Amino acid sequence: MRYLSLFSGIGGFELAIHSVYGDTAECVGFSEIDKFASSTYQEHFPHHRALGSVTEISTEVLESLMPVDLVVGGFPCQDLSAASRTPSGLDGNTSGPMFLELIRVLQVVRPTYFVVENVASMKIVCREFITATLCEKIDANTEVHRLDSQCFSAQRRNRLFWCNFPLNLPIPPPTNAPSIGEVLVPWAEAQELRKTERQMPYYMRPVPYKKGKPEARPRWHIYASRTSHAKSGPITANFYKGSVNLLLDERGGSEPLFRSFAPVEVERLQTFPENYTSNLSKTRRFKVVGNAVTVATVSHIMRCLQLVLTN
Image (tube, rainbow, N blue to C red):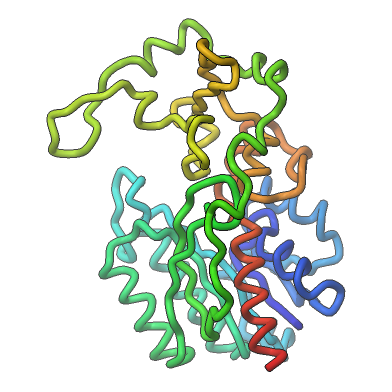
């Protein structure tokens, strides 16, 4: 399995691919421009060829990588996500141009299979345009699938995956996957992550619960994950900001603990190995893990591809 990795981040796709295909998988190159994500990637995959920015990979270089069995990548979502303050969609300065670069690479490399990932909260018109473009320019058999990480991990996280092969394996129920309580640090260690008295008024302040609705709720009620729930909320790149990195830890009984997640907990929620990003600062760890795919979700997709290849 010769694969090319685009918008590679810290190597979530790579971990999933090698968990299924082992040493039979060979990375012909990876593309990542974030220096912090790239440093973590290269610490775990030191022999993979760095191709730099996807915009600078020439046709000549792409042709030298062939044949390529599989291309994987999640192009930037900041213009597409509903969480963006200015969701400009594919007309934005980042998501649209990077999607076109992805199409360019696919047209040159002509892989047998591909997996493209992005946020599920994008507007329907954007999702339909991506699907139509992949069908028209790359493979008419392309289908889009919505997968929720809670079926494979301890967090709720909906993502879209475009594949040109069927995902025929059944999706396990969320109850088969870990719960949030299984990925947390011990209670004594959690005390060190407590929000300060100075921070608490910010979380207690009422804010509109939904746009256009007068009802207001405390900010923590909107952003916090809770240990009394089976799954956490979605891990995002904004977790480096304290305002959204919030857990109501109720393991202590009548005195719940308002605290931040620890970096290792976020890695576990995204199903990365423990301390996978320990080469980075705490802030950078939250950002690169939040930008990554959930490894276990992609592993499910890779097993579906394996089923195709063996039949």
